[in-house]
Image (tube, rainbow, N blue to C red; front, side, top):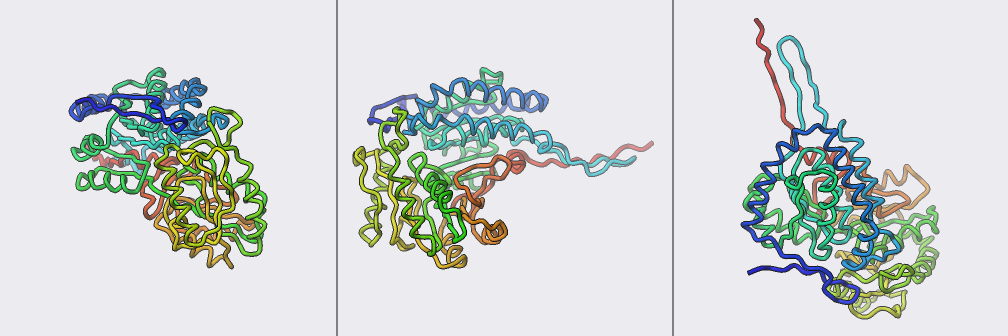
Amino acid sequence: MKKILSCVSPIDGSIFATREAVPFKTAKKKILVLRQAQADWADNPLDERIALVKDGVQILGTMNNEIVTELAQMMGRPVRFGGEFSGVNERTSYMASIAKASLADVHVSENNEYKRYIKRLPHGVVFVIAPWNYPYLTVINTVVPALISGNAVVLKHSTQTLLAGERICEAFHQAGVPKNVFKNMFLDHETSIGLIRERMFDFINFTGSVNVGRKIELAAGGSFVGVSTELGGKDPAYVMEDANIDAAVDGLMDGAMFNSGQCCCGIERIYVHESVYTEFLEKSIVRVNSHRLGNPLDSDITLGPMASPRLAKLVRKQISTAIEKGATPHIERFAKDDGEAYLSPQILTNVNHEMDIMREENFGPVVGVMPVNDDIEAIKMMNDSHYGLTASLWTGNLKRAEQIGKRVETGTVFMNRADYLDPALCWTGYKDTGRSGALSTIGYQNLTRPKSFHLKKLVS
């Protein structure tokens, strides 16, 4: 029996797109074809692979007008923000620029008797399981360095952004990347897990929830196949007494509310030094009230619906439960809040770490704000979490930020900014946020394996 995957638009609840899921046996056959083609792809000169991948991204850029509208229809991001191509291009350009150095042989020594060196070789077939919240950026993080390294790639995208994987592969194929080297597959969860269990892949990259991440690691358990995960987050910020408050308000409220709060490294909890707490809160309320909630196809809208009513329901429950336990809401319900996918933003105070709103990922346009006495208390609060993706520190003192940053349990520390992914730095997590790392030269290391050569020369 055929299984149909359906993308339900958060704009109005209609079915925006459907695709037939690939059956398990068919998927296995397709992957075996990729495995056969991968060796020839890896034998191509590195410069050629780099050029083809860069050309693919440029062709993707020519589709941007259509992509922006599709994103609004599939997951609710307002068209005024213009899609993800700027970040896609930035990350691709950087990863292409460091490819030769990152993949170069490590020469140990050579003399009349021996030649010794280490090569970096592709894993083989890489499985990329992509999320809906940034459906192009998250794919590029792995696909670009994986292909440049000589891997073949199978891309399984979220049903919520059903057309994104198709778009990316179409662009890359137009550029000349072989269809049997980079393939988008419409797979359901059961098929994906089954393929992992049967060791059809040589490396797995997953971005998504902690629960699904656990299932993937369990499915891969005992296979010795590498698994890279970026899972949940509860990213904190700390606003110190010497911070530029206006800049902190702009940066952190954008970090909390952009994309309706549906960002992996979105700000979900803020700790503010008590001496500037009132000023920060008052200005934050004004900033959030300036948003316009509504149909994301309207260019005046700054806040679209969440990706689904189910996700919005979870956020509403966290908010209402926190209020029942004593939290104070500061944002009145917006006119376009329909009780379904369209959700008003919210700032909560009088919150504490007994509340889920300060402990569990909400992935919505809500943030809790707490006053703290000093750096010690702020560090304690920031580290009181199962997650560890990023932390945002606001201060005029670089050395202070570095000292605090060393003690904060996250993969990345920002100073005077938030919610940004620098391709020159390793994108990695800590604790339940996951392991391994994307981008930077470390991204190339994770997508390849070292192979040592110890060659003894025959001496006559």
